[in-house]
Every structure is written in C-alpha cells, then in structure tokens.
Image (cartoon, rainbow over all chains, first blue to last red; front, side, top):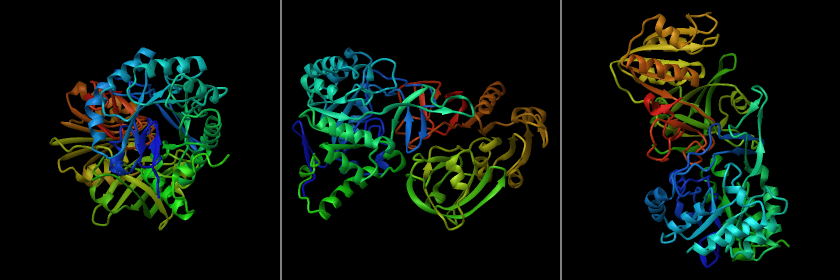
Length: 300
Length: 254
C-alpha cells in the first residue's frame, strides 16, 4: 500500500501534517505522538523577531468549534533556527515552516533567514485574521496575493505554499493569483472570522473582540473551498479546516487535497494526527485502495 | 510523569454547596504522580463542546489511585460533569502544569472561592507550620476538611462566617505572619496577595487561571504577562498551562 504523496518535488511518507499554530514546533505533542509517524510537521508562524501576540482572553469555545485570537505570538526566526529546528530534525518527518510578517519585507527577511536551513517547505501565512498589520491584509485581494507571492518566490530556496483565507468573496480568484505568481502549492483554509459575546457580562469574550473560528463546525465550508480551488488551479493543495478523524481527512482528499492538516483536533485529542494516519490506512486496506494518489480528487 | 489522556471511572460525585461539586476519579498513575497545584483536563461527551475543562486537583490518594476534583458548575461542560454518577466514565488528561514547591518554615495557604480546592492537597503534604485562609462570597465549602492540617481563618464577603471582607482582611485582622504564601483564587485576590507579600517581604507562589484550549503549552491561548522576557516564549508572556499554573509572585504581572 502506498500512502506517500509528493508536492513540488518533496515526498511525504503520508498525507497528514499539522495545521500551523495548533502544534507549536511539535515539542508539546511529542509527549503524546511519535512525530516520525507524521507526513510533516507544519510549525507555528515564525516572524523576523519575537511577537507578543494579543491580550487575553485569546480563546473561546463555540458550538462545535472555537475562536482564537492569539495574534501570532512567536519567539522569532533566530530562536526557531537555534532551538526548534534542531528539535524537529531529530524526527523522521518533513518540516514545513509557516512564515508571518507585518510587511512584505518582514516575510522576505524570514524567508531569506531560512534559505540555508534544512527545512522542506515554506508556508506563507497571508490569512491570519487576528493581527492588525500583515496576515490577512495580504490575502484578501488577488493583486496583493500575486504581489507578495512573487516577492517571496524571488527569494525562497524551498518550495512555497501560500496559505489562503476563507474570508474572501471568491477563494479561487486568490488561488489563481498565487498560481500566476509562481506558488508551488496552496493550503486552505485558515480560520473564518467570528465573534462571541458574553451576555452575562455584556462584553466580548475575546480581548480582540473578533477571532478565527476553527474546528468541526467549519469543515463543510473548508471541503467546499478545497473542491472549488482544486477545480480552478493545477497546484497541489493541503486541505484543512475541522478535520478530527480519518473520514474527515478523506473528504478533503477526495475533494482534491493532496495532503491534509490536523489543527483544532489536537486540542481535544492529542493523538488525533496518528489516529487519522492509521484510519486512512485502514480505509485503504478495507476498500482495496493500493495508492492514496488514486483517491485525490476522485469525486468530480 | 508525562501527561496521558485516558478514560477514567467515576468513584463518587456529590454536591458540597450550591453549584459546588466534588468528584472522585479512578485515575491510576495520574493519582500516583500528581503534585499539589497541578491540574487535569476533562473532556465533555457532547461533541459540540470541544475544549477540555481544566480543573485543579483537590486531593489525591496514591494508594487507591484516585483523585478528587472540587469544581463549580459555571456552564454546560461542568453541568455535564455534575451529572456523572459512580461507574460512569469520563475522559481525562493529566497531570498537567507545574504545581506548588514546598519551602519555608511557616506557611500561609490562601484560597479564594473555587481556588480553595487545590490548597487541600497542599495542606496535607506540607510538613511545616500552616495557617489556612479561606475566602468565600457567602456559603462555605471544604472548610471543615482543612482543620486537621492547620489553623483555619475564614472570610466571607457578607460577613456571615469569619471576618467580613476578603482574604487580605482576614490576614490583617488576625495579624498573620509567614515566610511563604501559597495562593489560588480569582485574579483580583492574587493581585492583592502579590502586593501584600511584596510589602511584607514574604515569598509568594500564586496559582493563575485563564481560558485554555490545548492545556499542554502548544496553542498559546492561556498566557499571562511575565515580569521579564520568558526563556521559552522570548517575549513577556508565560504559558499558564505549561509554565504554571503556579508562579512566583515576582515572575508575573497581574
């Protein structure tokens, strides 16, 4: 049975990675799962210097999901290279580094710092809804998606994944813009902007007022968007949004994703990633599927 | 011990006061290795409620392999928990976080409201001289269980039991002295304890709380402000679930 997939010349032993921001750099979850079982670890967003993030409360539960407004707190690229990367290199897994910035120059600085590092791919976060500058600001018009993608592609040594936001009128337009500018792959979806009000206190639950909605509640939207984008561009897709088990993962693969990322599920099941890999293998065995690639975009 | 997540059996679940419940869980190794001040995450059965409920450990019985949690019913998740009966199962992850560190010769244990439960196991385990200060809004709970471990002082906001006011009022009214304060309670209380401890030159260990998601230090949801740049985050934030919940007063800004 073959569970390996290839994106932009990078081979992954299986199609399961982690969604950026839900798994740190893997250290905390290494107590629960063998990181070497994963197709890849996708890291928390890395900026050119340390970011404090937003005020608390930063998280809130919602029906079948959660809101977060962490605000991309991270220790910066220097610490990432000195501490997190050597940790990840101990495992037999691919490393996808999520890159964040307030300006295009910020993004490019991180991309250049990572150029000589042993990382497999870069995922460019142009879709975080929780920061005042950067993030989603680069991901909500086709022109800005194209511009930032082109600037990053000029400097990147590793293949570039552009991570798209669902908070747009037509996500396939953003996908086409990234493709036109030379992106190697796409990942989608980031969180959907939401809000929760505490009626007892008559106030917002999150200090940031709004946050990104994730978890099972958003899965049908994510599957639809993966299908839409898969039919609009030729780029390989890493699909994510509410995946909690193998059946969910298979939905994304059948809709057109080459890989899937597990995010919020890690919070309620720290073993989720490995259970999903095992579940995909079982599905393949039970259904006589020899190659996972035969399932990608099999639903037309 | 590394934290594990597993299904555990309820040994007993009972009501202590309006909205305050006590549950004993057959947690095995989690009971054997948990330290005072550590917490566990409990998961709801209802899939619409995703996130674990972090609850501090009130007592452990290492021989029996059971832990006790005393919790307040504040929402649908804790309401579900209150509905569990003996022999039911619940999913649990733990032990989580860093607990209290024993030190000093004369200790003051200060608990406010639902911050009182973790002080019980601490009171049991500390071998030094102990003064226990418990603050309530009105109805008291667990107070009787502290008497074997030290002198107990109570404050209530309405003055119905003990000193009228908060725990600081009780400390001042009784002219209590100590070389270490351990405290758990709402943030305004911890702020008061931090100021008091600084003024009196007493070391203080404070147990903080914040809305959490992962409970293991990955999501960065439950941070608090740190006085100095934190060695892990490289900014002035510490993770309450992983680096805490117990911090020295001088480490954090409240």
